Amino acid sequence: MKKRLFTPGPTPVPETVMLKMAEPIIHHRNPEFGEILTRVHQNLQYLFQTIQPVVVLTCSGTGGVESTFVSLFSPGDTIITANGGKFGERWVKMPKAYGVNVVELKIEWGKGVTPDEILAALKAHPDAKAVYVVHSETSTGTATDVKSIAKVIRENSNALVCVDGITAVGAHEMKFDEWGIDVCVTGSQKGLMIPPGLAFVALSKRAIDKMESSTLPKFYFDLRKAVKSWQGNDTPWTPAVSLIIGVDAALQMLRAEGIENIWTRHERLANGIRAGVTALGLKLFSDSPSFAVTPVWLPAGVEWKQFNKILKSKYGITIAGGQDDYAGKIFRLSHLGYYDEFDMVTMITALEMTLKECGYVFETGKGVQAVITSFQQ
Ligand SMILES: *Cc1c(COP(=O)(O)O)cnc(C)c1O
Image 1: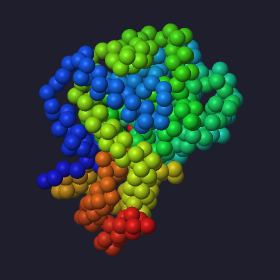
Image 2: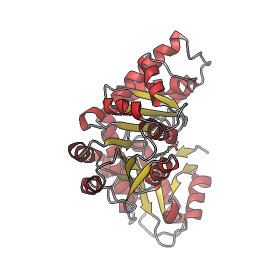
Image 3: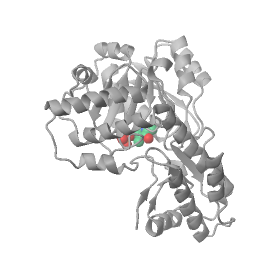
Image 4: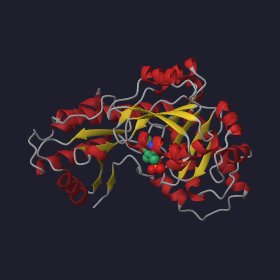
C-alpha cells in the first residue's frame, strides 16, 4: 500500500531531497559544508523576505521559539501572547517557566486575534517588551493578519513583533523587513519539506540589540552566539549536517518555484480543499482559515476512531485529529509543503470513500467535482 501523509508537520519530503540527505556525511568545518550553509543562509533570507540574519538551530520549532524567549528577555519582563490554540498556549506557558510575566490574550479557537485586540492589550500594558502571535495556528487551522498587527504594534509601542511562523512560512505571505517583524520562527518539517530537527529564526536589528540586555540563563540557545557564527556562515555547535544538506536542496526548489508562486499555490490548494469538503455538506471549523491546514467538523454520526482507522489502514492516508476540546470532533487536512492539485484530488477521493463507509450520506463524486472546478477557475 502506498502511504500518504496529509499532516501539518511532518510533511512529505521530495525524493530529490531524500537522496541528498542519504549521501555520505561530511564534516561541518569543511569548506564544502561552508558553501552549503552560505547558500542556505541566502535562500532563507529570500524565504523570509529579509536582509537580516536567519539563523539555523538544531532543534524542533519549539526549541526555536524557546531560544527567542531566553535570548531576548529578563526575569520580570512583561510580554503579551495571543493564545487561540495549542501553540498560542505553549507561548504562554514557556516564558512563564522562565519567570517572564505573560499577559495572555485569550482568543476563541478558530478566530484570529485582531489588531484592535492587540492595541487594547498594548494600551493596558505599555511596559510590554514584546507581542507574540501565531501566524497560522495549526491546532485550529486559523490564520492571523500579521501584517496589520505588526503595523499596530510598531505605531503604538516599542514592543518587539514576534511571530510563530511555523506553519505559515512557505504558505502565507511573509515580508519580514517590509512589515516590520522583529522575530519569526519556523521549523524544518513544515513548509520546508524536510524531516523534523531544524528551526530557523529571523531576527531584526532591534531584536539583536535587545539581546544585549537580556539576563535570562542560556547557553546552547543563546542567539547572540548563533548570530555571531551566522556572520561567518558557521554554527556555534555541531549542526544536523544531513538535514542542512536536505534543506539546501529544498530551498533551491522553493527558490526555483518563486516565493509568490508558492504563496498562491498554497492558497489555491486550500481553496480547492475547502470547496471539496463544503460540497460534501461538511462544515469548516475556522472563521479565518489558514492556507496550510484545513480543519473540518466531523459530521454527526461519524465516529473519529473508525473514520481515522479506515483512512489509515485501508487507504494508507494519515491526517490529523482535533486537540483538547475538539478531539474526536474535528479532523485536519494538511496541504502545507510538497503538494500539488492532484494530491488534493486524492485526499478528497479518500475522504469520500471513507465517509461512505462510515455511513455518511452524500452524492458520490460531489467533493471531487468541486475540487476540480475550483482548480479550473
Ligand atoms: C508544529 C508547530 C510548532 C511546534 O514545532 P515543533 O517542531 O513540533 O517543536 C509550533 N507552532 C506551530 C504553529 C506549529 O505548527
